[in-house]
Image (tube, rainbow, N blue to C red; front, side, top):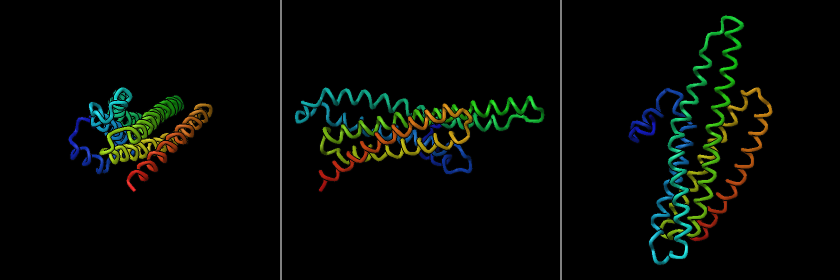
Length: 208
C-alpha cells in the first residue's frame, strides 16, 4: 500500500518510470494534507481561553477534517488501483469479435470507475478548502499561515482531481454520464475556487 510507505520510499516510487502512482494519488494526498493541517489548527485552538467562544464549532470542524483525512488517505491507493484496472482492461485479448467486445466493455467499465475516484477526491478536497477557510477565520491566529497552506493544498487536490476526471471522461461513451459529471465538477470547482480566493485574501489582509 502506498499509504503505508515511508515518505522517502513513496517519493522514490512516485519519481520512477511507473505511471502509477501519479497525479491522481498525489491529488488525494494533497487533500489529506490539507485536512491534516486543518485538524492541527483546530487542536491548537481548542482549549484556549481566548477562543472559548468558538470551541464547539472548532470541535465540529476537527471531527469533519479528521474524517476527510482518513478517507482521502485511503483514496491515495484507490486511485492507483483504479488506474491499474484500466491498464488490465486494455491488456485483454482482442483476437475474436467476442473478445473485442469483452475488452471494450471492460475498458469502459474500468474508465468509468477511474473517473469516480478522482471525482470523490475533488468533492472531499473542495470540502477541505471550505474547512480551511473556516479555521483561517476563527482559529488560533498564530496558525493562520498553516490554514493558508491547508487552503493551497486543497486547491492542488481539487484542481488535480478535476483534471483526472476530465481526461477519463474523454474516453467514456456514456454521454449522459459524461454530461452530468461535467456539470458536477464545474459546480464543485466554482464553489471551491470562491472559498480559496476568500481564504487567501483574508490571510493576506491579516499578514499585511
